[in-house]
Length: 401
Image 1 (cartoon, rainbow, N blue to C red):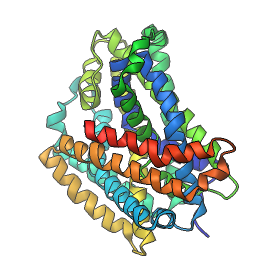
Image 2 (tube, rainbow, N blue to C red):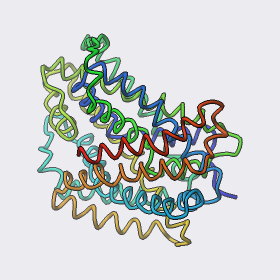
Image 3 (tube, rainbow, N blue to C red):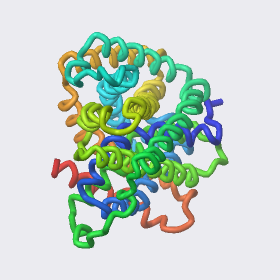
């Protein structure tokens, strides 16, 4: 009998995968770039595209005996096999720079706020390399334990901790910094005609929810038979959106109080947050909580990311798959750290491979029509969205990037 999630376990694991660095440092930046219209666009495209894709992935995973290769291959022999291969390559490569970043967030969380290092100096340091090796070994060991004894045990501890950190920081912003302007954003109707905003909302929504990466197919294959896939997808959407919106409030409130502009990515975490230590009340404690939040979000996502190549190899009958993955992760991660190849890796994987994976998985999972058992209405519309509209939008994203 296949290793199964508990009812709460699959939701926590799904949230652990979905809530990552993109929620904490990418969403606030993009939302600030566009304004209130982006929040509405994000909600609409999530319900229109991301949630149906989640339902489709989870459904096809549970329907077919297998983990990722077999479900996709049965849906569409050639395209499904290609989608599984690309998703596995993309997520494996993603882990090789996500793991070093996870190590860096832990390194900053463990550093004294008065002596935060410069990111460039710290990233390729021996200390960060040591943290990367430790985190990689723990991650590989966790996935080797399987679903019930591995990732579910981790997320049962870390996801409640993540929610506590988010709520604590949000309450700090509201009641200590007295920053609530982000709650009253004005809507500028002409901005809804901005095509780039809608494409950015689609991109952020899909990858924020870990849709189209194959992770949810793996998790669906380990879901219990009578558990509602639709409810799981909706809970993932609600939980992930709550974290993303809260992260916007936290980042906007702290940086607005400090009279700093909202930056994106690495500049937000390792420059802006570092600079607020001596500006906001309890700055050292706040920066520690923020880096602890980043670490928890990154670590739970890292485990989920590696589930895809691990179970792809398992589907192909390869024993000790975690050892091969671990060796690859350590070697390529070491190169990325020593050569500082974050930007190049992010472009290749984040801007190219992952969107391609999402488009192929959307088409392949739709053909199985396994999602129809979970939907009472709009079955034809969902099929059309997953087969044609969403892949077309992703194609436009690839062309624009």
